[in-house]
Amino acid sequence: MATANSFLDVTHEIKLDHDNVRDLFERYKTATDISQKSAIANTLVREMAVHGDAEEISVYNHFSSLGLGNAAAHNKEEHAEVKKQVYQADSVKVTDPNYDQVISKAVSTFLEHAEEEENDQFKLILQAVTPEENDKLAKEFLTARGKVPTRPHPWAPQTGGLAQKAAGLQGSLHDKVIETVEGREFVDVKYSHPTF
Image 1: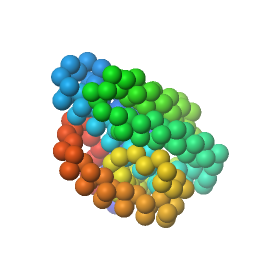
Image 2: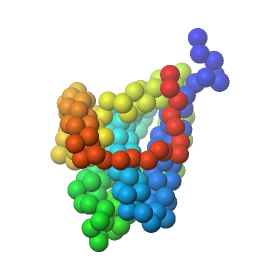
Image 3: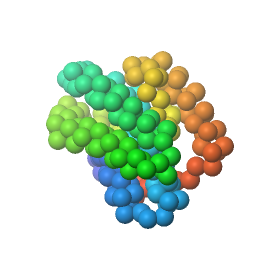
C-alpha cells in the first residue's frame, strides 16, 4: 500500500511539462548555433504536442466528475488553437526568417493556457480529489504521455475518448518514422517525470 509520501500529484506533473516548455523557450531564445536552435525547437514541438494530447485522453476525461466539466470543453478549445500553432511551427524550418515569430506564437499560446490551468484549475482539482485519486490521475497522465503522438495533429479527433486514443497510437508510430527519416535531433528537458 502506498503511503502519503509516495503519492503523485497530477498538478505537479502537469506543471513539470509547462516548466519544461518555459525552460526550452528560454534556451531557444539564447541559442546562437542553428543546429542547437533546431534541436531545441524540435523538443519544444514534441513537448507541447505530447502534453496537450496526454491531458485530453487522461485528466480532462475526469473533469466532469471533479465539477470541472465546462473547464474540460474550454481547455480542449484552447488546445485546438495550441495544436494549430504548434503544427505551424513544426511545418516551418528553423532557417526560415520568420521562424522565431512562428515558434514564439506557438509557445505564447501554450503558456497562456498553462497559466490559466495553474492559476484557476489546479486548486479546484486538488480540492476535488483524495490523495489516492490524485495519484491515480497523475499516473494516468504519465501513462498517456507515452501513448500519444510526438508531433501535432490538429485535425485528429480531440474527444478524449477511444477515437483520439486510436488516432494517437497511429500518429505516434507515424511520428517516430518521420523523426527517424528526417534525422530530427532533440535536447534533454530540464525536469523529469517519475517512473512508477
